[in-house]
Image 1 (cartoon, rainbow, N blue to C red):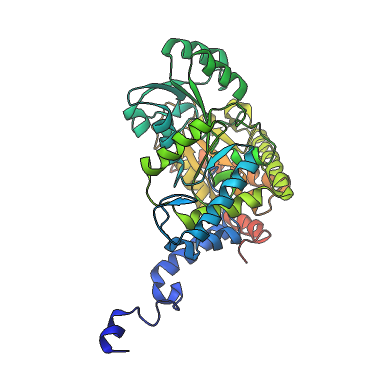
Image 2 (cartoon, rainbow, N blue to C red):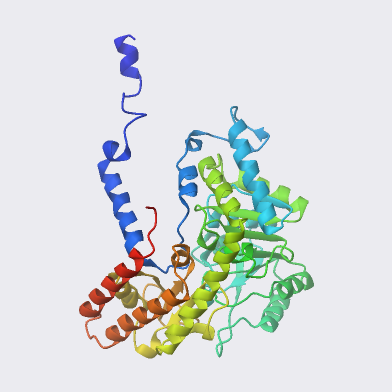
Length: 433
């Protein structure tokens, strides 16, 4: 080898150096995050813990491959193996959710919903979605989001007295605003969705029905939540959250004409080359969700959520709508005189991770809030059952009760004591050993 060719080639360590050797700063950050996940109780409803197999697929050599287009119709050569991976992901997604067509390329939940808008609407068209303040999502028409800037969003909400969607009011609103699209689904709504009624309302006003099941898709896959796929024109979901896969999006439909529009909306409409390493990891996660043990997991997620909600209520905390039908709940902190931001920080100091969240008709600002959102998917993945979630509920109540008695918004003695109990509990349920 000449000196010039040696200079131009990759360093000897390029294909052999570990991350710790090549970039100790990032390696340290990853190690720190692993420690956090091992020793904290994760109650953020949109988070989960993926399998080692999913991690391996996402960290594979498929990250090197460009593959614009779809299996069998790529703009690049050398796609035979990524075609295998994407085809497996598509077929597994279709089988998992009983759908005729699936697009596994969306890079995120936002992009999957953007693709649905691109396929179903024209700029300026009216659509309806659940108000963010009532448990909806930014991509369902928030004025700060593209969906609220490019389209005319009309929002339905929940009843003030019980915080549940009033379907008769949804019907009346649809008749008034004549939307081209109605969205069902949200990010902080703990009750069941009446997909059949939503479709009837959509049909009555000539609208498409889009169901965003990002939060509860794993429960649908596990058979413990009604499926929207038979009712919706288009169903979207993220592949993480309760589905327990890599971060990304998925679009489903039973309409071949819409499937073609949705495919075109993703590529070339919104995205270029798909993330093939993530698609491979999606395929792995879909295969995991097709196994019998995933049904047990989904059942446990719901049972654990109900147990946590009831435990918190037993300790004098208010739960929005009185309980939960899925994997999440909202805690109304107003009776305790607490705010969401202060409560979140106190629980994090106690090694219980959650997020502040607005509640319906919340008088506080979005970065303050009157509530906390709690979810059970991640801790259920590591093996927590009803008994453990009752313990967790008691620990949360101890921190919040101490916080309510503290004028400076901190309860260091209680937080430290709970942190030790959390470590003892998480040590019984290790991850990534």
